[in-house]
Image 1 (cartoon, one colour):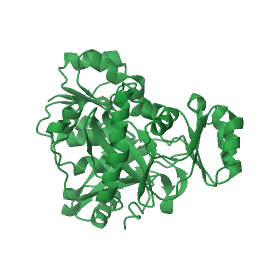
Image 2: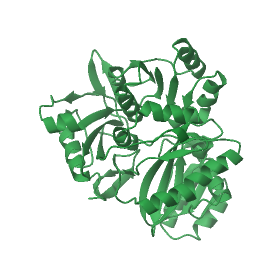
Image 3: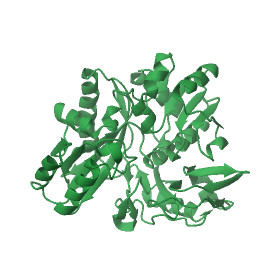
Image 4: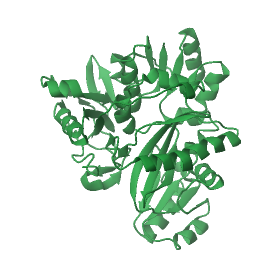
Length: 421
């Protein structure tokens, strides 16, 4: 099987790493990929979707996998499918579940899927009036895509008011903030759940937990994610069943009623409040860095899972997972998430410790290659992933690997998976 992966981050690297070990995979291409993905396959410098279709047809690509949200929201899946190509991901209509938070919240309400009390509006007056009825903290969200940064947890009425004004004026997120959602803050613990869907059926992957804040003890600003682990002991069989019956099944049924069948990854951000799962958000692709810890837990070949989901054939697939835990620690650049950083050469020590060599790996994200030297180019640079029979063992191994990686200004949290431990 020849496979094309669209994207350039750690998520796409992790999918590629899993596929590179898959005996069913012959050739692997990345469009555009990053400075490290060329070690797994071939990078293709094409961003135009029609040109990518031409490349896929010319090279007899059996399956295309879309990593990031932007191509999905822009309709790349529809473009590929109109040419008869097999592609994993939701079409443009279904991708609205992430592309518009207003659409998503209204969808949840329409199909009686549990979510927080909210309003959606483009009126500052209406928003400020609703804010007065809520207890703090208060959640303020921009409607459109903001690369995972369009959510403000306001600690005061004044902070919430300020966030609304800045979003609606375009100061914070441009056009993405032309509508806002104000919702009640839910007090519980947050989980990331991922369902691989084929429009009718789904397979729920082990639950993960992300660490959004920059610093230890969940302090500092929100980021795209500073680490994750899976599976989490905070999710139990009863909770999984509630998520399947109350969230995933009505979502797939509802999307079919909306004439927008959902194929691809449905990422459900869940807040567990008194043992009840409440939907915080949907994304229509793998989270990052959750993808980095979920891919190595797959025992079933990833190519089989993605292909059967893309072709509506999941009911014929039995999926197995490794009886292990994975912990991923993000190593970021010096100025993340405030500003860009000067490119810095990455040096990885030769791994001589067998425990590290056999049970860890690096997923590369914000990197480029020049003259065979890998440089950190800013943002989240890479993820050190450790595997183990327990969360503690996986965590210890991930941090051993962190000590083998060097570049100027590197920073990372030292408490990933602390909630489970």
